[in-house]
Length: 215
Image 1 (tube, helix red, strand yellow):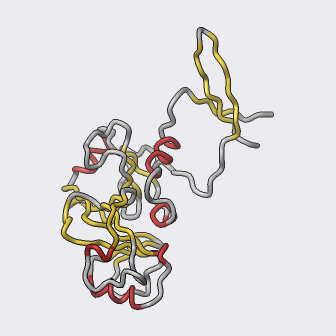
Image 2 (image 1 turned 90 degrees about the vertical axis):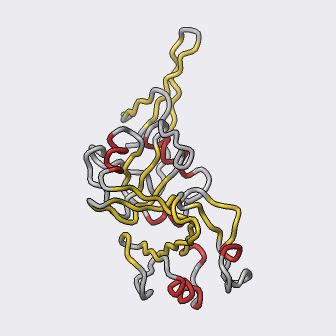
Image 3 (image 1 turned 120 degrees about the vertical axis):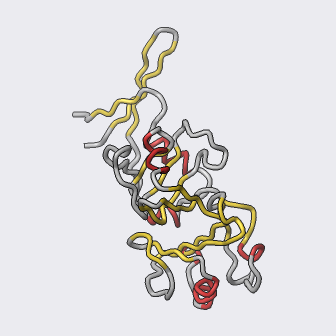
């Protein structure tokens, strides 16, 4: 049966029901059960809530690279910058190997970080999740660019985000972040403008919504 989404609109004292089938995209965000208690893990996504007003992280989607009692690290994946890789690094062939660069976070902004889809065969790369690999090594970067790699399988970030031990759990508890099951396609296919809006509207829709199973 199809799900029907019902928006209830109050207009001059009259309640109107607007019914439309809910779209079924290939991937929809899955909020971790009781996410304020769930343990974050590498490969999961952090989606900023509407209440998060920090100008560095408002409307951001973060891929967690690591999480332990010592702290957490991640990359903001939905904030493209105006620069290309060749603007930031020497020895990059702008015609053959150029890639857009994203703002990864407020720390280490003097350094470029790389995510690869299916990078298991790249020596020196670190696995983040089933199909996402990470590196901050120029040698690894040069090795990857030396072989033909689909542009859609690489992402580059300036800077990263970090939390001290217990800090991320506290921020999740107070409602700054939603913890979401990770997805490779979100990072490599859908990152950029509109990603946060899509996710937050799925996770915390505006208005008064009712889901019905029609006969």
